[in-house]
Each structure stands twice: as C-alpha cells, then as structure tokens.
Amino acid sequence: MRRAMNDISTHFNPMAPDQLHDPYPLYARMRRERPVFYSPMFDLWVVTRYADISEVEKDTARFSSVGALDARAEPHPEVRAVLAQAYPRFLSLVQSDPPDHARVRAVFGRALSAQRIAAMEPTLRETADALIDGFIRDGKADLIQRFAYALPGFIICDLLGVPRSDMEQLKRWSDDKTLLMSATAPIEQQVQSAHGFIAMERYFREQLHERRRHPREDLLTLLVPQSMGGTAPLSEQEAVCNAMDLFAAGHETTTGLIGNGLWLLLNAPEQWKAVREDPSLLPNALEEVLRMESPIRGFFRTVMADTALSGVTLPKGSRAFILYASGNRDETQFTEPDRFDIHRADAKKHLAFGKGIHFCVGAQLAKLEGRIAFEQLLRRLPGLRLRTDEAPVFRPYFMLRGFEHLPIAWDV
Image 1 (spheres, one colour):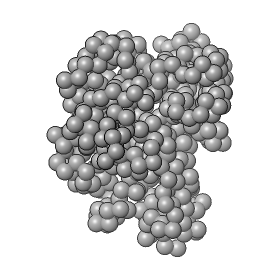
Image 2 (image 1 turned 90 degrees about the horizontal axis):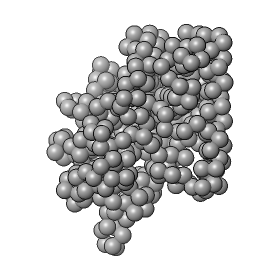
Image 3 (image 1 turned 30 degrees about the horizontal axis):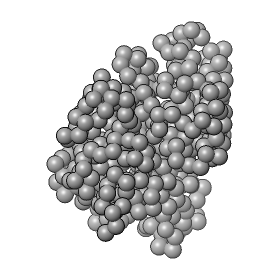
C-alpha cells in the first residue's frame, strides 16, 4: 500500500471521492492507530474517539466554540476583504462560549419550546403531503431535490416568519455559507459565496427591522433585540447571525436525516419491511440513522490551553475537529458499530446532536420532521425503492454528510 494510504494524517480528506462514499474503514483505522492526529492538509487536530469527543464537548474552558463552523481560523485574504462588509461571523449560539452561550440559548429555549414544536405537526404533515402530491404520479423522483430539501426548508421559513417563496434563495445563500465554512473550494468560488453570505445577512437584518416595526407571532420577532424595542437580550449583530445559522441548521440536519435514513433503510430490506409494517419503530430507527450516518460530520474547536487527549498534546491556539461520524462507530461504545440495527437499545447515545451545553437546540424539531417525513413516504409511495439506473451523489462538504441526489422509484 502506498505511503499516502498508510499515513492517516495525510490521507484524511472528507471530500475525497473514496471518503465521500465510505469513510468508515478509514475512521476505524484512525481510532485504532492514531485516535488524535494532526492533519497538515487542513491545519487541524482530528479527534476520533467517542470518549475524547465527549471530553472536548464538555470542556468549554479549554476548547472554545468560537469559530465552530469554520474549517480555517482565517479565510483567504480575497474572501476576508468581502466579509469585512459583514458582521463578525462568530456571534451565533453554536459559536459562543459561556457566559454568552447561556444568554443566547435562553432565547432559543422560548422560540423552540416543546409546545411550539408539537403544535407544528399538522402543518408538517400537510406540507409533506403537498410535496409528495407534486411527484407521486411520476413513479420516480430525486428524493433530495423534490422532498428532503423542501420539507424542512419550508418549515424553518414558517418558524422564522419569512415567505416560503424565499426558501430557494435562502437555500442558495445557505449553501454559500456552507461552502465558506469548508474553505476548500477555489478562491473565485469562495469570493462569490462570500457575496452570497453578505446578501443573506442583509436579508435577515431587513427582516428584523421589519419585525421591530410590525411584531408578529414568529421566531424573528423573538430575536428582535431589546436595543431595538424587542425582548431578546441580544445585540443586533447576534440576532442576525443567529437567524442565519437557524435557517442553515434548520434544514441541513433534517435533509441529511431523511436522505441518509431512506438510503440506509432501503439497503436493509428486512428492517425496511419491519418499519413499513410497524411505524412505531420509526423513532428508534431514526436514532440509529443518526448514529450510523450523522448529517453533521463534526464541529471545530479552538484549543485554549495545551491539552492531552489519548496521549497526544494539542497545543494552545491550534484548531481541533471533533469527528462525530467516527465517534458514533466507536467499538468501545457500540456493539458491532458498523451494523445498522433499528432495534439497537443504545442508539440514542449517538453524538449527532452534540453533547453538553452545545446539544442541538433544534433536535426535537429535526426528529419530528424526520418521523413525519417517513410516515408520509411509507403511507403514500408503495414499493418505494432505490433506482438502479442512476447512482446517488454525495454532497462534497467538509462538515456535512448527506446526498445531493438520491434517485428513488415506487409503484404507480
């Protein structure tokens, strides 16, 4: 085997074709041979074991979440010049540390209360049915493009209180934001995406000012800062950054959950049959999907003090990447971790929604969306199957694990 294949530190590249398709054999090698290693390609320390990832998540003093969404601490100078027109990017909930984190999270606790989320079920079901109505007679479709993007996209628009007709544009800007986070695209493309980021920021700033003038029963109204006459203990910059992150997080996780889940289930006929015959198995099946194929590959952290993990010292000031996708298949935590089992008793131990203070504030919404999506697909598309004449296509993003295209067919 070539040296590059033997050297984990140089072989690690989440966007390489082989790792897009099936990174898990490499992740198993990492956990066995080099559970914490430095990646010169990305200037990151990669953390692969469940216990180490959990320690990083809980130790907010030594591992800062500021910049948690960015692969590189500093963008390219041309990109930085464009972003100089924007607010600082590290003001959102997922990119904050104590004590600011508790202040910001309290706002989202009100906005995403269990009561508010439960009340969304009828709208979710109606939206799922309307989307299926648009392609059911065709007998085939791209699940991602026709359903898995739009369902959570429309729902997060409803929550924020922005028109559903804006969803496609917001999705394009959100993709720009995701591309910037990876910092691996050609510079020209990153510059173009930086302009999209600026446009998205402008959009939500204008929406917040509209809510200041005309409050509504929506999440954006709850984000209006006290300094603008609202109730949120946020600055205007924080409110805008959190609105942007909420849209991105509000559709990316569920899109991945739906696509990854259907792919796993349709490749496991006996388990698909079990869920089809007994939909009450869906909640735990979705937990197992989140473990096996987490839509979020991991997050970044900044090391605030020299810290040892698995016998390796991460130096102060360096960047770390906590690889959920590896921790979720850690042999010390899960029996037969590479086996997909919808009956797995401890599936909920997965890392897909994080741990500690950064446990995903929208986790319950994502699970509800996933359950409703599968209930409606099961009910309305008999003989649902993966197409054999067209291959699925994975999304080439550093942080995200999911499909750009997932061709499916059913009986008409």
